[in-house]
Image (cartoon, rainbow, N blue to C red; front, side):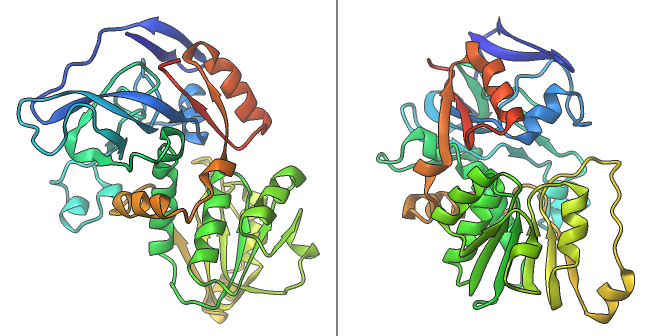
Length: 331
């Protein structure tokens, strides 16, 4: 089969590799839509420590089951599925208390195991979720980032009628804003230096948008979520949290990055700071949320590329062109 292979950091190409065969509890999926996200760029650039090389990337995907293993009973050939890429060991201390996203032996399809930027990919049958016949694969490939956003909301206070401020109007910021609006937020504000992205945020869910929080007509928000991973945005966001509020570090900052904040204010204003990492017991709920139409996937997905144009997709992502960019390995 044809697959996009990252041979080593900074080097990738379409290559012929062996077709995957399903193990007893696995299935083979033919991906029809594969999202590109920041993790993929970190993998390409050699900035994601768990990744071994060579690797086939692609962890946000949906497609059709084309083969099943000998012990698979709940998934069948021709099923249309979205796939949770997370692979937990089920035996370490974190897994045993239900926190598999912090698994000591964490793995993921497309991150540490061969992924979906290929004509076929082998995945555990238990990771497959059937999608409605009416749901386009392009929309279904958004379920993985949506499931990360759902987990993020699991870690927030969950009170209705509060005011939200979201930093970043990329894929994750737009998903977070839409979830906040649907979950009963009194208002949702979004800041981003890219005015084109702000226009999209305003059309989807934001009550107010600006290139910086100083331009917004509020002095504090009960919930502030950083979806950028950019240190200046994190530092600014921490100053915008209302007393008794919550700040969520959702965006992925470089491992060596540091931020400056006031410990006294965290203490004196009883501010909660919480991280959110990947997916945890949230994928199935994200399937249902997508099926209900809470997220405007049609607006979110803007471009689809073939495997041979993967480099163009990466270039567009780095330049901030479009919104969610996807690859269709079947083209």
